[in-house]
Image 1: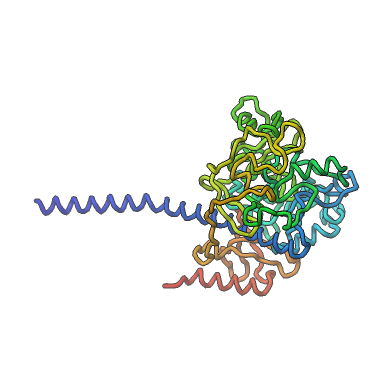
Image 2: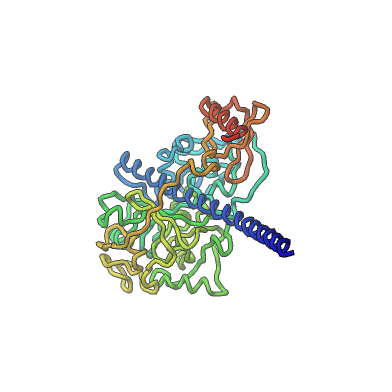
Length: 460
């Protein structure tokens, strides 16, 4: 009887252990997926950083926060100097085909409407000017646009992505530093002496509207200055996730007003979300300031989008990735020292922090300035590049190229059907089925190799 009771207890113990192990497996898989997505975000930032350094090698300056063609008020005939840095570095991010579409005269084949080199304004209808709806996948983090990345079962018979909200958005944003005064104002033409002096005083970040910077301007050192970070994006306002509060009075003199506005019941919002237009360089679209800590609210003042306080944000746990000027990527936590957000930003007008003073916004603000002579003694952990061989899904995500049109798609290989058709899955969830022979030869070989390995995994 005792032996029988012992056996029953052993069986029950095994059942409990198996049930416990089974409950832990999904959590482990989920954690691995989160880590993989976070690693993909930091990898994209690192690639963008390399693109900026290659751009600098070619042009001896960084791209301006906003720039482009001016002199025509017709939004279809000029981009009105609103293009952001992500447009300028396209050819340095292996996006030569998209860059050539933007840089040359473009004609919509469906409508016959022609556009000048460098395109219309970034907010122009992407169905009419298609390059603005084809933002590269490398400008988007797999984890940072939950509203726009819903799974889809739509099957597309080409490598061309449909015009969707996801194709318009970006998750990587330029650092406008710790400035608070009119950081979004775009200057048409040459500013007068007073405006030029005010802009130089108030703009202390790696990027500023209508003006490129050089590495020699980074007196604090490239290794002490943030170039880029990330943001949770959505084309339309996503309540509580990707939104911008509007008409917050006194914002530039007290950024803390944005925090108070976020708690108010009477707050109003812009209809668009953060990161809603990858080609537009204005801070509300693809910029941020090192003023409020990461994952804080974003606001604009009574001056509209010309005067924002916009924050870096992510869906990673407890912080955001940032790209440093030397090309490294570090992780900044939400509780970083951000000084006193009740203090005014830097400016020449009375009531503002005088130019040349340390950032009012602590270590976070200091990391955003290029030339404030602030010593940064904190050592932040660098995000190490992931090994592509460590993740099977990542290993099967590749760039596929059409052998005639040159159209490219970054997608995960699924299978080859009937030895004739390749099936691919884009990050947006769309399935692409194209004849295998329409790919370039190296892609055909790679697809066959993947299919063979998938059907005959090692060890079988």
